[in-house]
Image 1: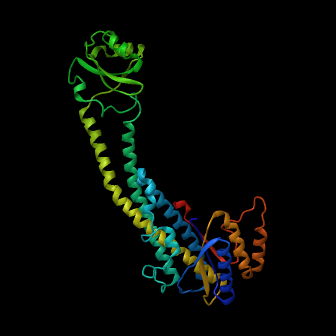
Image 2 (image 1 turned 135 degrees about the vertical axis):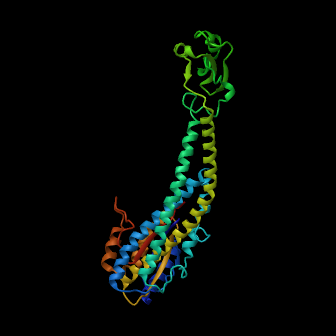
Image 3 (image 1 turned 135 degrees about the horizontal axis):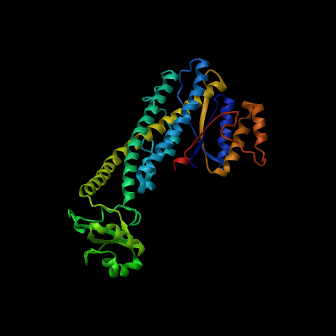
Length: 381
């Protein structure tokens, strides 16, 4: 499972023994894989500061998780046909996310533990805010490019009635710059090809004999040219409709056709040029944002542990990885039982609630006698 429970308990002898009991039970019952989660000793500051940080870190946690999920989705969207390989780019410090979480070490160089907690949190908050700002600008530019390209490509799709003809016709298909003659394009249903060849010259006066030619066709019909005198255009259109032939409104403009083709080539080139740098930026900054997120989790454990267990700072953090979803309920019961002494009243109510009652489920927001935070990587899979 790509889910982790980050908990802490006081570091005194009684609770260290409780942690050992937890490890023994969860190991024998194959409920979870447990590892110690090292958190440095920070400068605690005042109680008011910790209470304020508790609230701020909660909001920052939510923001960071939302940001990395958006970045993961951006990687998938950018990779398009290769989205199955997106996981190769969703790494943290060059390793897969599970390995990073299970082998977490506080980055002293990036977030010095000797600084006041407020400063550490502020550094992470500014870092994530900058990443989000850059993400918005970079992805917006790429999405605009993709949208413009998709709109042009959409013109090349569809049937002969709606699609662009600039990539189908050529100058040689038309009589151009004539004062009297004009070439029309006519869509003829496939079953009516024979009828068209027999009748197009007689649909109106002044149709040039043997002037029709099949330019292209799709599964429904074909696109034919026909040349006639300008003054009979409306009469020809009317007679064509009566015979289920459709004159496609089209004016051959060489400059406009060239402009469309150049625009398509430019957009394809721009997309290719932006793809590599954007994907590299997403890979690097996804890693940075994910690392910051796990550091936020560590900070939350530290702050909540001090608020819950008091001073001097003395607690042990443990990372649990449930083996399967079905064992989560049993694992929760084990934890509540092992640590019920931390808060007898709350633990008793939790244990009572763990009895199977239809419609009742424990959520991540429920109160537990130990410090608890959830890390869910499943939405990044």
